[in-house]
Image (cartoon, rainbow, N blue to C red; front, side, top):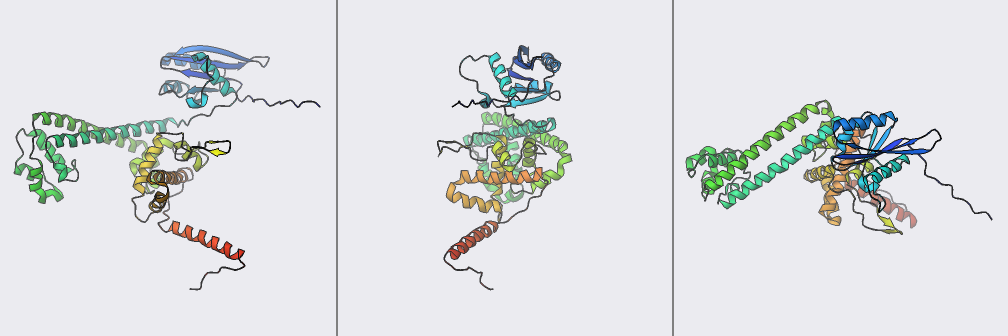
Length: 419
């Protein structure tokens, strides 16, 4: 009896390709080509990372008719390489976890050779690289987010400073940085003496006008030059951050003016406002061509459980995606969505919260919002609110179906009662 030979081989997808091991100052490139005899050849070179040297890399690749390049997503060091190669060949950005080399014999050259070998056989899965204009939106929205967080930090520092100086404005005014609060802060920064009742009366605005006596008592403390120096510095930073945030928002409005209809349809989803709609578009783009279904988008954002099964046993299903920017945005959107009364998301959240807890429930709501976003962007649909009664309707149908099936098994027919 002859032994059957296993003839399974890994097919070659890209006969000519290149793997790049990218660092801050140096790039190791391994180019795989095919000679006249059909044999593969390896050519390994090293390049610097200045633009002139990257152009030499591009010329070298185009001279050998290399159609595709793979490189590891190491921080931001892949950006200069991508800027030079974009438009001349396909660039695949690979997650470092997916291309981990075998232990031992670890060098930059071996890494580039390993990358090229995997790419040649089509074993690499590229990361999502949006178009240039979307990348610019992304940089602006992320910068606005950083500034907004810094603004909140500095406002908390002002709260802490006032507590150390026995100033209790925020115990009377709900918003320390409202009109009345800012007027009092300006008075504290400008005047070296204690504020008078007249100063407080001039600063009070709106619903705080009847509370002038309480406001006057709240600014009586131990506010000294030491505190005034810190307050002036903090308010200068706060004013600068608010100016920068406004400038970025204005710039985004100009860049996204042609997609106003899409922004309005996203704004119709509970929890999503203008800023969050801009942030969502900057993360996923305006076509979603790279995502074939809602599950693909949710998985990419880390909004669904991971699969970890071995020997028929299910292990931890925790998602392998941590700290994804889109996930952060959608979680914040979900917290806002559940506050809308008589909405589907609010009802679903409280049903899940009882069984799974608040954190898992809010992630589930973010997952459902991502589905709505997918259909709005990819298929051009508009959001339709199902209402709080939708889940009751689904539950009623499910119970009715189960009761009919049980009645049929017992030899009865279940019919609705006449009105």
